[in-house]
Image (cartoon, rainbow, N blue to C red; front, side, top):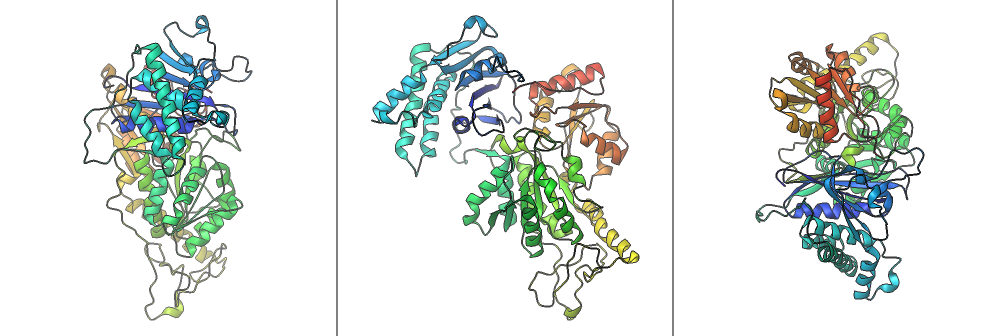
Length: 621
């Protein structure tokens, strides 16, 4: 394990339960002291189409997927050979992605012609899923429930794959039992027995000739908490809860819905409410109203939802509401686009969310810890600067799983910003008073003496509508000037970070979810051909850290931009704000995240060929 990672893939028809199978497998691996990075790809229809889950296993932290697969667990023949007769698909089956000596575990009823396999070194493990299922049900006197319990064949398949990997089946069975704790324990025991029978079948019929073994680490520190498997949606929700979220509004939309559903499951444990509204317009306006009412408010959606929210964002900006915080989970567009696929194409949209010139902050975390940190701190910024805050996320961050030893929740400070307190002149409270900082102390509705007017028209310091030119100038300077205040006060380590040596031959630039794959790629590339690499991650996108970015890129010898969009939107923003034109662009816009191999290949090609633009796609379904 120390010399190479192992990628395990399970595939099957949408709705067949591969999520639970893959995540239980991943938990068993983590339970054995190893690290995983996992990600699912699925279609936007509810049932039937091919979906698959990759789990990358290592003894070190990984942050991205690999294209090469060591072991396939197939729940149908399409996982193996694709759709040979499909007219508009490039999915040729995952057998072609196997490494030399790779293997496939599959139902013995699927008849594979070895002469038609992509290579002759592929090891095949046909396992009689249904026979093993029948044996399990006989042992539990449940044979009459065969149809209802067919999903247990997934568990059999995973158990068989653990025998191929020579892993500890007991760790997997423990995970299964825990999943049914407090519910149908008998079902948990049946699944554990099914997994064990699948494991035993491979051991008895195929021996142990697979080259890529995965063994648990023997030495475990009993005094440390076991590592966690965490998704971006969970890190986001934890950050909100720690920040004191009082209300979250949403209308269901992928890939944002999972976050709100998770918060719904937690609302009885915390002083918050999660409201599913009738549409996104209601969601944003309810959140703005709640922010005006003095509580911490958020809404969560994706691109089509934000398209409906723009007027509400403008409403919050001109009324200088302390929020809300908008969690923007990007996906493939435009319009409905690719509802369940990856893209980073909404940066320019997020920078100019409302018509006219309106202040709001945009931040883009790149991993679970940063998602937690930015989810927490965004509420402080909303209160301190009295403006909406946008946290840019995406489908990849939503669905990927990381192994994390601990989520750092120390040194968290709640900052509610400038609050108004009566000082003997309560009858003349000015909600939009002109101040040196541009931030006017705000009153909480119901506060004695703190009554004020709030309107979406231009207004004077009391909140009354006016079109006076002098007042307009001062109000515009007041509102927009708060962005300059934020730019001065937000710490540099929240704005950007340079990974690697200060002086390098090549500087890679990225934002958001490309962070992980860039770090993994540079680990592989650094030192090859005598080149030193570093990585500039830009996290705060509005107000843009112009001077800091210009300073780093101004001394860079050669620069490469990596983005999950067609137009390389961050590159254009850098050029617009600093005048610096990044040397090379590596875009990917096929709806899939970068894999480590394809990014390494693209970065090498950019350096070797000198091409301005190196397009990436592995053309997988």
